[in-house]
Length: 158
Image (cartoon, rainbow, N blue to C red; front, side, top):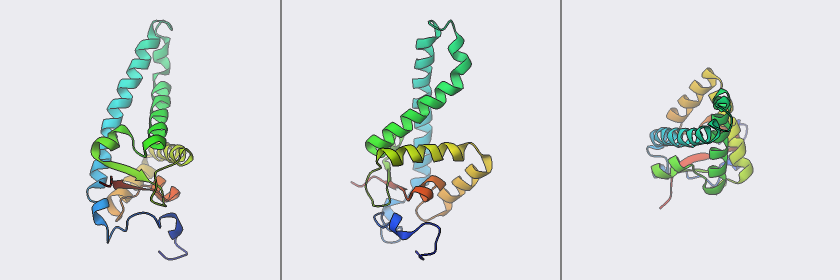
């Protein structure tokens, strides 16, 4: 990578090379999408459980805040599972994980930042379109949060 490129090579030196180690990136965009669907279902079920548990004590008022509860559950779910295992349960089912630029697993700070940037991208339609296009078109299938943090989604090493 050229030293004047927007994201310095030092951020991704530990990641597999997409040309020499293409097996780490084969099928990752589709696996990432399917993992996202799994996680959407899991978060939905957890959120439903929280809503049901608090419906009676709140006399049903909890449903007024259901979107905020879903967002909080989703944020905690993503940040905590990325920090613990470098993958959400959906990612683990699909055999992929998010790796830091040094090739290692994510630390808690990077997991939280990745989740915040994920939400930022998700909140703006044009940004999300660019985000999806990047994942589909780039050799490493990296998203905008991945580029900003020097991370990459890879097939889990065996």
